Image (cartoon, rainbow, N blue to C red):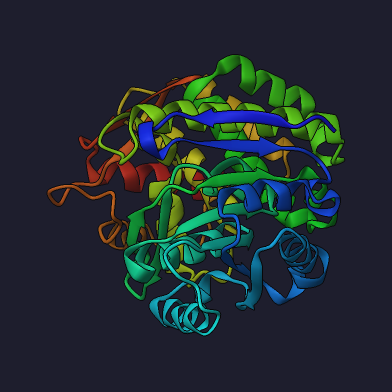
Length: 367
């Protein structure tokens, strides 16, 4: 497949998102990485289950191109995204002789990219890293924009840094082996882009859902590329989330709180965000901002993607509000919500009474 390139324009931190099916197996990914750091060292960070399929071919390709490469594995799952895991990565980087000219290459999903990216951002005061995302969610969202971080017991992503990758290499072929639940979780973030930014794209996603769920390569490549374009445009305007970039958090205020309250065991990130997007629409209804027809359009699209939309009956509104107050998006003690005015347009507000949140969640439980 022809290589597609999406630029992320950030001055001297600019980079490209390269998209091509089969780029890992063909050696194209190794070519692009080797060009960034000729005759240097690289640590390829991945999960044990991805080592043989993706990390080892990439390691071999880098070695053939004069890069001294080492594969480092970490266990999968949100529960391993913590400071203890970062310390273990530092030790592996040192043992591999990784210096300031070297590269960290993250091969995996969003959790792994966050973890490896944060380790790269802080090792030797910052070394370059490359994202090679292997899940749909990571390909369209987590790998782009330079957000890296780990969790604390009190909440998600409370320790982190903005550290832009040197490149993002997306191989849609990796989605062929992705579990169906992970595919659905990634579709939540794709649908989100249409809601927050592009009504035409939202309609295309809804139309393409059968093809996307069937993993048709042309449809997947098209929606991955457009999702990357949208995120790149937003990040280029607001790299460190001082304004516009906050719209990317649509569904995340409640979604992150739901993940924390359920100890990161019940929901995939995209599933929690799907529930959170419906929560946000209902909260918008409660304060008179979101028309019911918009809520229905959002919920219908998520249901068609086989994503959850109901709020769990065994989680209290009070527990969600308490967890949300520990979220990094809280400013001056006030929760910030991204709410939909219509499909394709959202607003960020800190002026949402807790009663409106509780009323919306109660309605969502009953739905």
